Image (cartoon, rainbow, N blue to C red; front, side, top):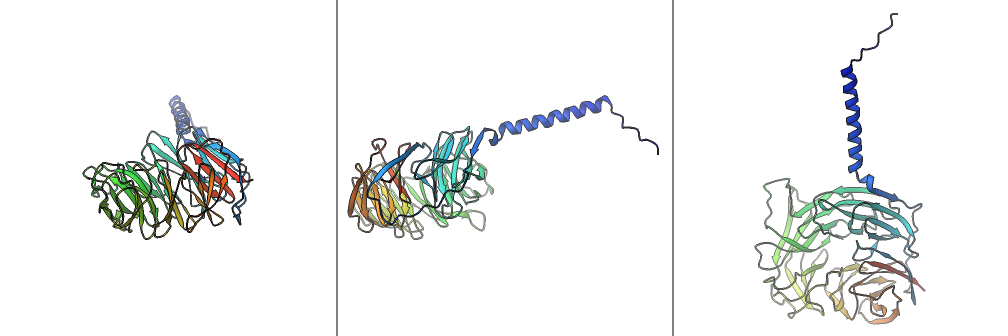
Amino acid sequence: MARVKPERRRPIDLAVTAIIVVLVAVSGLIAWLVSPVRGTTSVQAQSTPPEVEQPAAVPGSFAPRWHAASDATVTPAIAASVVVTGNGGTVTGHDPASGAELWSYRRDLDLCVVGTAWTASTDLALAVYRNSRGCSEVTALDAKTGARKGARTSDADDQLRLVSDYGYVIAQGPRRLETWGSNLVRGIEYGRVEARVRPEDEAKRKDCVIYSSAISGDRMSVTERCADDPGYRLTVLGVLLDDDERVEQYGSTLITGDVSGPPPVVIAMSSSGIAVYDGGASPAEPPALGGDSGPSIRRFDSEGVATGSNTVSGDATPPSGSVPLDGNGIVTYWTGKSTVVLDGQSLKPIYQVPGTLGPGQVMAGQLLLPSTAGISVRDVAGGREIRSIPLARNAPPDGVVSLRVLGDVVVEQRGTTVEAFGPA
């Protein structure tokens, strides 16, 4: 058999091949340079942390266990068995009792906000990073191990807060918001939308500022003010697009007659209604429904129609760092002068506790509220103080103190510091 002569390679062939090789190498280098992986360091947990045991009673005393900087949270981020902090560009999962670092995830970007969601199911930590498009880059981490579970990017404002219930998360900025499911797939976008899927779906109202939001099941509520509005508005939306691929609006009502005061704040939402803190500086619409003028908890039904109000002790300007806490059938909210305790379903205020430092949660059937001395232990049903437990805090409380519970550990956030206390 005759030997086949090798294909002749001309100089031009060699040049073209060299150019292709260079282009492939440059493309790979560029992809590596812009990839999030380049600036990411992930240290995952060696094993899954044990489940947290619920105490039979509130301990007689608490001792400081650990503290950590967390400028990306305003209230402790509590997962099923881990406390999550965010500082600079690093998210860390801590053992609640010792503070030991179980896992960490770091990027060469600044964090906007860190939170936890779906703790009873997928148990995720959400880390939102800031880039040139705002608080745009979202990473979902397994809260137990720190393993990366998903990511998304989209247009976003430069400030963001995360609000969640068992089903969805709201990522809310001052000009736009989105809802996400546990797979990080977007449900709706509302407010400033750069590229609408259907150009004919122009927003009903223009140039709106979004101040607060809450969520329950398949509905969410926001307080906002749009360009042509004389007052502040309460709007109720669906968290998913309707059958026509549109944002579903269940109701939108002006709830103040002017904007002479700060905007009211949505503090809770249930399947039957919405609770809004109104400092009373702007005239209410309708006027004083079920209560006198001044700071109040105003109640609305699931379409935003006013149903009543209860006066409370509070500041005219809602505390910016006060985040409502829920669980065990109640919601607690700090008004700047007292902690108001609401029924979790009807959202009617049950009682208020003056002289507190922030909202709190239930441990072993008793309500724990942060106080100047430490922890005020109260009867959940009526608010009667059972006892006071002193705390030796790492630093004196300044501003709102947000207290959450994980097993027999109390976790406080004060400013940008998270501190944990365990049974002494």
